[in-house]
Image (cartoon, rainbow, N blue to C red; front, side):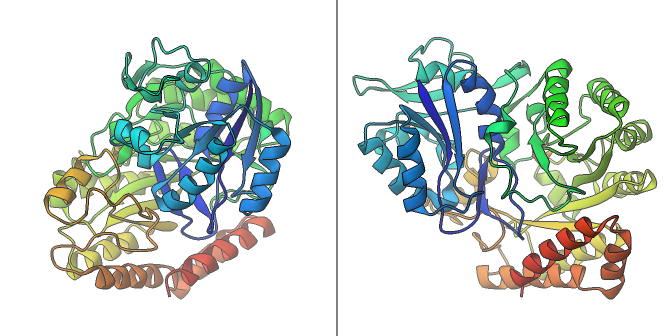
Length: 459
Ligand code: SF4
C-alpha cells in the first residue's frame, strides 16, 4: 500500500500534534511527533512518503499537486481544532478522489465516534500514534486495536477499544526521520541545526485537569529502541534534540540509564520537559552530563490554591526549589504558565509575573487556558457556560483568549497576557543576559528571530 503521512496546508503556521493544535507563539515549528512516530510503524510494512505542507510552506494547490504525484492509496493526516474548517475541506476533497483518510488530532480526541459519523470523508479517528492502530486499520485487521474509531467498508461506524489507553511499555520500529523535510523546522531552544524531535515515552502519569496529556495513559519505550533511533540520527549528523517527553525523569531509574547512555556518546545537546518536584541533584547532574541544556517546567500559577485545585500535585515551594536546583546545575529554565483560568484576576496575573521574575527564568512561556478536548477542565468550562460544547474551533497557542475568567472579559485577559510578556522580555537586564549567554552566532540569531516574533505577537 502507498501511504502518505500528511501535515495538511494551512493559512497560518499551525502546530498540530500530540492532541494539541495552535498557531506558533513566536516562530518555532518542530517536527509533528505523531507523524514521526507513525513513520516507523507504517513504513515497516508499506511504502510511505511524508508531506509536511506547513514546514514546506506549501499552499493548497502545491500540496494537492504533490499528493497527486505520489498517488497514495491512503492518507494518515493530522487535523486540529485550530484549522478544522481548512482540514475538513482539504481532506474531504482527497477522500472524494478515492483515497482512504485516517486522521489524528485534538478535535477527534473527544466524541470521536460522533465526529466519524458526521465527517463522511473520514475512515478512522486514531486514538494514539505509538501503537499499531493505524497499521491495523489500514490493513483492515480490527482485532486488538487499542483505542480508535473506524468506519467499516459497509459504512458502520465502530468504536474499537479492545486494549484501551496505553500503559506499561511499547516498542515501535525506528522512526524514519529521513522522510521529513530537511529544512523548515525551527526550535526556539536549539543550540545548533539540524535538530530532530523525538519521544521516549507516551502521555503522562499525572492528573492535571487542564492538560490533555493526563488523558492519554502513560507508557515508555525500551531504552535500546531509543538508542537505536538516536544513533541513527547521530550517523546523519544530527546532534541537537527536542525530547518531547512531558515529564522526563518521572521514572527515575530509567531516566538515569538513558542519561548515562547519552553521556557516553558525549555529543548530544537537547531540551526536554520535566516537573520541578521530580528533579533532584542526582538527576540534574545526569541531565547536564548527558547534554541536556534546557528544561521546560510548569510553574503554572503563583496561587497555591490554583495548583491544588487543578491537581498539579506540587506547590510553589516545590517550584522554587526545582528551578533553583536546575539553575545550580547549569541548566537553562523555561517556566510554563497557564493563565486565564476562571479564577484569574489582574492581581493573580501580577503575582505570576512576580514569581517569573523571582525565579530568574531564562524563558517564560504563557499558555492561555483553553478547554482542551477530553479534559476535566473542558467539562467544567462547559458546565460553567464559558464555552459551547459544539464549538470545535480554537487556537491553543495563546494568540487569543478563548475563555473569559470570572473577573475578566476575553479582551482584558488577552491584553493582560500581552503586557505580562512585554514586562518579562523587555527588561534591559534580561536582554543583556540573553545576549551574553548566547554561545554562538547561530544561537544569537535564532533567539533574536524568536524574540522578535514573540514580541510582534504581543504588542
Ligand atoms: S501539566 Fe505536565 S505533569 Fe500535568 S498532566 Fe500535563 S504533562 Fe503531566
